[in-house]
Each structure stands twice: as C-alpha cells, then as structure tokens.
Amino acid sequence: MLVSFSATPQVTADFTTNTATSGCGSQVVEFEDLSTGSPTSWLWDFGNGNTTNLKHPCYILNSWSL
Image (tube, rainbow, N blue to C red; front, side, top):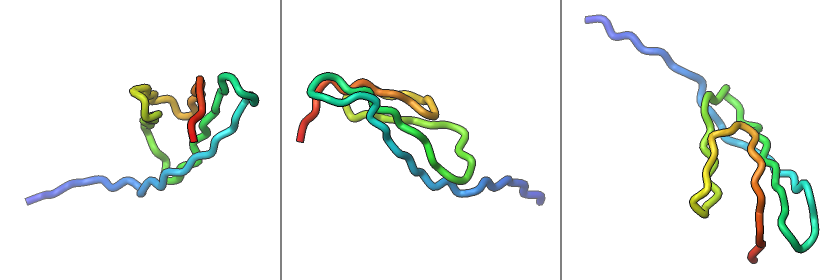
C-alpha cells in the first residue's frame, strides 16, 4: 500500500484596517491581509450579506452602530 499526501503550512489569519475617510457620513474601510503561512484564498464576510474573495478589499460603510 502506498499513501501519498502533501502538507501545507498552517495559516494564521491576521489583518488590519485603515479608514480612508472620516466624518459622520459613509466611510471607506481598507482591509489589509497580514496572514502568515501563504494563504491561497480569502473570504471576507462583512456580516450583512456582503462578501468578497479579494486579498485586500475595500468596503463602504454607510452607517455606524455602537
């Protein structure tokens, strides 16, 4: 019996954000992936039905809630 497999390094997710504009209106938030372990795909879920698979997405927030 021959069993063959390949192992990939463990990915540790990490990111940072940068708010491109400020004020009381809409804000553009830039997400920067800082993950280690050479990820090959991304899935950002913004919690409101919007998702993207971009590595470094930008997202427009139309309102803030506390």
